[in-house]
Amino acid sequence: MVNFDLTEDHRLLEQSIREWADRDVAPRIHDLDRAHRFDSGILPQMAALGLLGISIPAEYGGAGMDYLALGLACEELEYVDTSLRVIMSVHAALNSLTLLTWGSEDQKQRYLTPQAQGKKIASYGLTEPAAGSDARGIQTVAVTHGDRYLLTGEKMWISLADVADNFLVFAWTDLEKKRQRDASGISAFIVERAFKGFSSGTLKEKWGILAGNTGFFTMEEVEVPRENLVGREGEGFKIAMFALDQGRYTVAAGATGLIRACRDASVRYAKARKTFGVEIGEHQLVKEMIAQMESDYQAARLLWLYAGWLKNVGRRNTKETGLAKWFATVASERAASDAVQVHGANGYSDEYPVGRFYRNCKGAVIYEGTREIHKIMQADYLLGYRADRPTRCTLPAWNGEKSLRPGA
Image 1 (cartoon, rainbow, N blue to C red):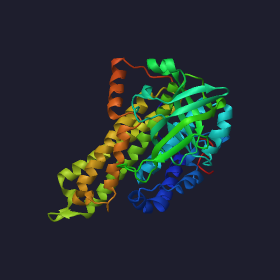
Image 2: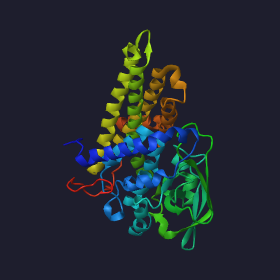
Image 3: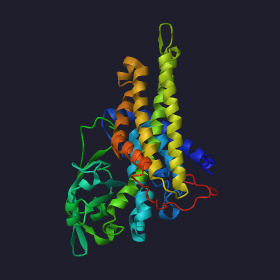
Image 4: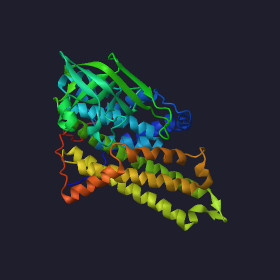
């Protein structure tokens, strides 16, 4: 039986994140966004709250909470700013949860544990200058060299590119399959920033998520030990798609938080602003926009909660996770646009947060599968052209009996 009831631990998690973000981040986020500056000091605070390892078992340094907790954290963080949720997407979901499932015991001890503790920051390297939705289009190659691999290539639009210590990187290990665009020739590797030949940079001309760090990194014959191969050679594409399932889940939950932020900002403004002698909330078309935000918020929340429940019980969820990501991100774009409209001329001013919401929402409609890709995927499921992949369970059974609050 599906049960979306939140436990006391879930509620306490929501409250602790909300209080921290409202007290320590929200008052500064406007200035950080305006300065295009990522505040690395936020990371140890998130680590202290247990957020960076929220869904990693305690044996690997994490808080041992479930997927619903991960979603709740992402919703609360993006309610304040998308840049906070992005940290969770790349560090906690795309990288750490993938290592939890596909990594060797040695890799979990050397990389996953310090990441879950927040001692090391992690990112994900799939996208390249000429390869976004077309993952088979990557050009990065890994050539065997004795007991090591030599990785050469460039990754683009990488969150935390200039911040992360460890990167989950995808490269062709079979050049013949590369020519044939056969994805079974792609492999996954753990690459450290400290490896010789690795360099990174920050993209300066972004339109949104200005308080986050987004950039690129290049590898020039970077020597990667054979023990840093994740899974087996040729499993990289499967690993990348598994990682995207986790990342898309966090994006869906985060976009839901952005819808709620747009709704709350619009309600406040509609009660404070008067035109024609009445609060603008009295005008029917303003009510319509606010009602749409509420409808979208409730629907998006139910979609990500359902995907999270499926993940918790170890059932297939690629279809449901993709649907949640598609709906929530498109709905967040609509909510942000309407929030600007509700604010009128003031919505076009940097003094109000809705302009930042509008700039931030657009990225999620593009990354981790564009809205067009997800629309095609959902149609293919219905038409029988696509079958969901079995989901490898990533978390131990969670019985809700022990205290799982971060830091407990």
